[in-house]
Length: 283
Ligand code: GUN
Image (cartoon, rainbow, N blue to C red; front, side, top):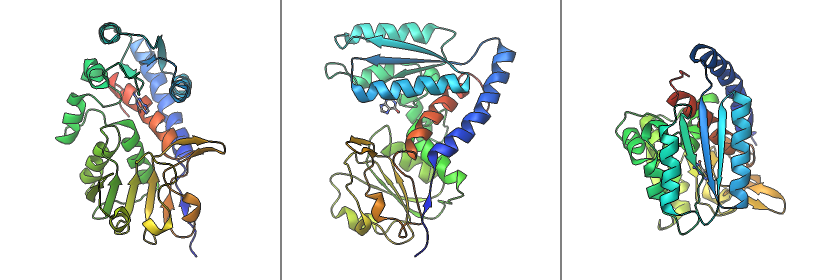
């Protein structure tokens, strides 16, 4: 049985953060100010609170200034837009992140569209998705971008390979497929309506799993030697786990990201790098 390579996103993110920190310090010295990221959170979703806390801590580690705006769950769409407009106009804010999900009475698409593309480090505005899909990327959405950087770090060449992306969200699945395509993979998108999902994934050399169902897939879904990136994040009694039953894949997969410590830390790192890029920094 061959050993499965664990794609240690946490270590890759830490190494990249150390490099970014130096570049940010240089930027701050030259420009007389640090790059700035505003994080807007509406309401009290406990998972979102943790993510936002981690993002703010990561900013501090990289020398990026963060502005934390906490809004009540009763916030109106108009007041959310007003807050975003104010951040759009600020010269010390290079990136604006509206933490998702928003409370149900708010329209996420409209809120995201209110962010100027030049200040959208999530890469989720239609302007930035349009640039990505037409091959003129400004910033790519953080999670799929982070997956690509993990592959790059471990020299996993995707060119010519069969890559299957499970999930078709704007935040992960669609941009993930696009980035893999740009790296010359042969890409299939699977989703909740796909017939015989495991027959599709078993053909794949690379599978990116972003279905949002705890432990959905196990060994029977993958061919031997597969590379798996597990984007799932589920909080249970035993801590975090992903969409894949990774314990079944040891010795079967060529490489896989663990949960926690795989894709999650890279998502945050890519947010920092995108913010730096929007501030005019060069990575
Ligand atoms: N909620 C979960 N992940 C993300 C993310 O990457 N960006 C934003 N804005 N909200 C999220």
